[in-house]
Image (cartoon, rainbow, N blue to C red; front, top):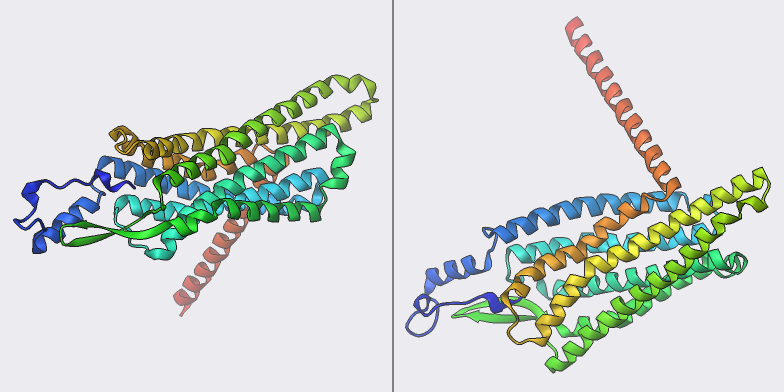
Length: 365
């Protein structure tokens, strides 16, 4: 939150330039508490919906992706392991970043302490970095699975996939490490009242601009361009392979068609995830670059930034929807839903039966 939006007129100050007594406390509360503003009400509603969808969706996605992993071919299993890692990143954003960001939007003073002041921006940047790097590994995995299936099976073993996931988190942590040291708890003064705020304090403003541009290039421009390019090459190979059915016998055609359908579904999911990431995070990157470049950014940029941040964080809530386009995962979700409904019906019947027996016994007594 940019505190340059807080302005005090001279009439609200006492003669010595300070806020007086209880009136000062009340004025500070009114300035910092924004729950009465239409934009805050809209953001609260949007964050609440995103939190519910993201929390439930990512937990179900992890459950479904993990329980089906061992039954799949090795290349598909590797992709599912990477998708589980991506869902874990999204769940971390939903559980850590969304509640604190919403609370900070409602009450602009930072009341969450120094640890969360450093942790929340770091977790947000870390999850974005891990997500886009995971998408890059998934794109490379699908590319080799289509263009060179034998080499893909020998290279993308389970052990190497786990090592790659560890490398993704290590590299993401290294990229985002400066935030742990540059984001600090600070204070602004409204007269006699010290208001705690959480912001980036760099030795030079130029360093902050360079770092933000570097993040935009390394974590957005390069991986998005690379993933879209390699996904296009993968899709081109898959759709060209659809024309080779005549070379197989009927049984071979059915097997080949089933395998090709699975690969096409995964390719669609990867492209959807990359496009969703690109669309969700571009407004926030653009807003931050505009704010850093100009000492007095336009008011509309400051007003739009909270909504841009919501859109970026909501990417973690929308990703599980893309997983549903995996055919067998969708069927797994239906089976899970059916079993859950059966358990609930069984529980209701058991409870009703016990209640009926207790009522009958009381009537007999």
